[in-house]
Length: 275
Image 1 (cartoon, rainbow, N blue to C red):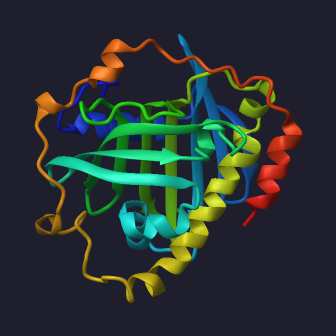
Image 2: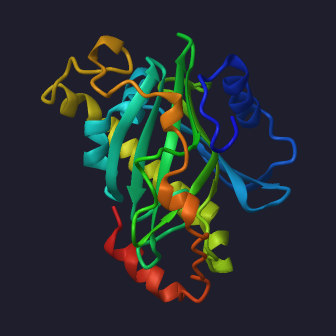
């Protein structure tokens, strides 16, 4: 699914995600610890590398992990870097469009000394009964132009795969992301994505998943619109709404050079943000 193209996800779109995750050819293994591996892959014509994560949560069921990835109310609890998340609308029970902004988009390497990033994303998901898949890519919406003081980032493809663990109890999580934060980032920061930011994301998600069942039972436990489409409250969206805003059509690309950011500033920010 190409950037800016809005359509109902097809089987081939989910198969592409699975192929990227399962096939390690042309991927470089950058980080390898028990139950956590991180790869990167260069893509011709695009400066920022694709990132892939494989991890295992032995104490989290696939069902719970899938719910954590979906639940918008719980994300407000565990995603401490989220500034705003909003459902714009839905096409059908498995395809919607939303707005997301963050002061730290971990896998596009934006610690808080850098400018905030935001996205307009089409999200699609599929539950086969054996595995669950979620994917997104950047699109446009006429009512959601880039916000002032934010840089509009691009997700070429970001996806999650949830499976039963292949090595005992629990679940396996696969993550593939090809995201361009735009602007010019420091080389040293880009190089730290696999060594620092990816493991940190996994740690945060694992902690959130362990705590989800006890939280959910006290917070609208029967509300799961990703399982029960009749609970969807977002408006139905029309394809003709998914075009560039007037501001985007009339404005030039806002290039931001953040390459002079000092590593010490990020270390200070990371220390304040440590789990």
